[in-house]
Image (tube, rainbow, N blue to C red; front, side, top):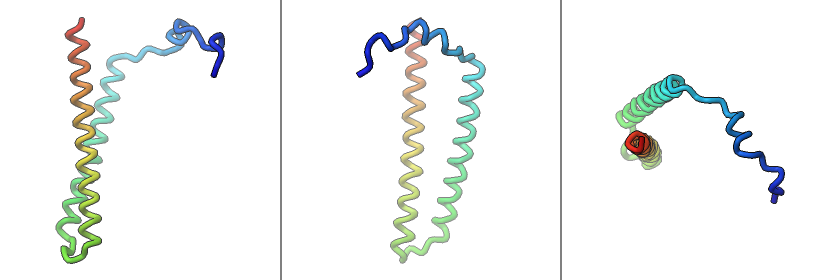
Length: 97
């Protein structure tokens, strides 16, 4: 365990943190969202193409496609949940002001 004297005071830590401007945060969110949307669209297109060319009598292909669909669905649900939580948090902060 570190001795208490080696921990920096909060004021020192806060002074070294560079402020983030709202516009850069907004631009970063827009950029990340557009990248994710493009990747999700490509993954969806890939799943649709695989589903049209799959041999339903081949259980390995069916399980691989099912696994891919499951991972895609899980990723979309995670993004949806995170978006909802962030939106709720921002709403709470705005109402508290």
